[in-house]
Amino acid sequence: MQKLIKLNTVGWITVVSAVILLLASILKHELFQSTAFDLGIFDQAIYLISQGKPPISTYMGFHILGDHAALIHYLLAALYKIYPTVYWLFVVQSVSLALGTIPTWYLALQAGLKESQALAMAIVYLLYPVVFNVNLFDFHPEVIALPLFLAAVLFARQGKIVWFGISIIFILACKAVLSLTVVAMGFWLLVFDKRRVCGLIAILAGIAWFLISTQIIIPTFSGKEAAAVGRYSYLGNSVFEIATNLILKPGIIFGTIFSLDNLGYIILLIIPIIWGLSYASIKPLLGAVPCIALNLLTDYQTQKDLVHQYSLPALPFLIIAVISTLAAGKGWLQTKRAIIIWSIVSFLCLAKYTYFGGRYLKTIDTWGATREAISLVKTKGSVYTTAEISPHLSHRELINFTSNNVPSNLAQFNYILLNTRHPGWGSSQEFAIGLVNKLKSEQKFNLQYQRDDVYLFVKKN
Image 1 (tube, rainbow, N blue to C red):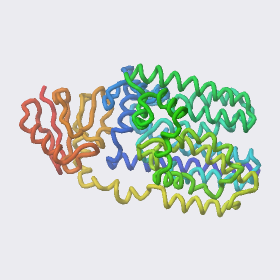
Image 2 (image 1 turned 30 degrees about the vertical axis):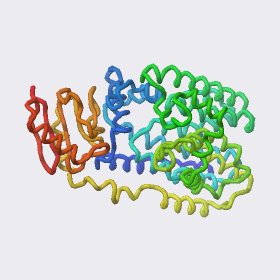
Image 3 (image 1 turned 45 degrees about the vertical axis):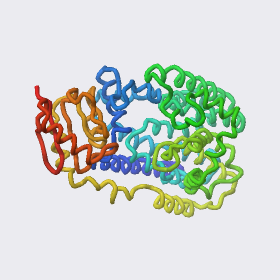
């Protein structure tokens, strides 16, 4: 009975957390703080799939499978068939992030932790800063894989091979690069956790999908190498060239790995759970190696923080590592109260809830005018607008966001919506004002709306 009460407590914590995450992401979106990269990309592609049209992302210029070979988009499109709205993505993301508490709870109990410690671990998971932060950074399909990694380990330890295999399939469908984490998880399960069948399934499935996605699907649908290859240009210009140089020329990476940026990143990564790391937790951390290594090797700075999604695949294994420490009777903290207090302090220091009191309010002075202008976009005609407005208008075959270069053919757009006061990511006031002046003298467009430096131009019939 007591265990059932604790499970109900975890269930309520999960539901409340999902609601909080959902409201936070919706509020951010309504304040015009979402962007074309990445919410607009996924929303447009999933909408087009739901309409039976080729999911060509006009933000990127190619088929959505050429991005990360994320087959999960086709499953998400079923929700858009019920009703096409971007809010489905917020629901999926918030629920996925919150659901990680359930397998965390069961993994903790399975490892022999007391129920109070298991409840504390569920809260540790929720309060790990990247969970809240990534929820605010538009939408990314790999959030669906987060609870699935934890569930996969649970199924492996329970001997539920079929459910383990299903979890792996869905994980791989979320993003091509997750195949590396699946392989690492499989190696850990095979060699150290003695789950040989599940370990072999993960290794073989991960390797196979990595080769299929990076060498066939992504090049076929995008016409080039995987998007992230450019972030490792000092190692080579293709996946195989990078892998070869890592093996044959290890010295080339020393200058990149041993840097203050990477040291700061590692500190950020472990501070929320440093109390629970010990020798007993080393083995489960093998699953986090691909994710952390990719972030250390890149010169792309946004992969070295807890704000973006790049550290997400490491989180399940950090949590499992802490559970292993507690199960071995080690760790700085042992009681539920002390563990939760540490997590709360870490969250308050590293979570980006403060954005709602500053960064997200910077464009509030044009909020009303922007909403009015959007309401005047009556058809599914093509749109050219700012990066922040575009996710509100992505349900169409052609949409793009402003940069500091005027498109060669403005006439391809039926609507041009600009905000000269807040020109948006990738643009500038000088560009926006210049484009407004150009359009005012353009015979093909009418100025339909103007208020608070927000302009809507509509192409003449």
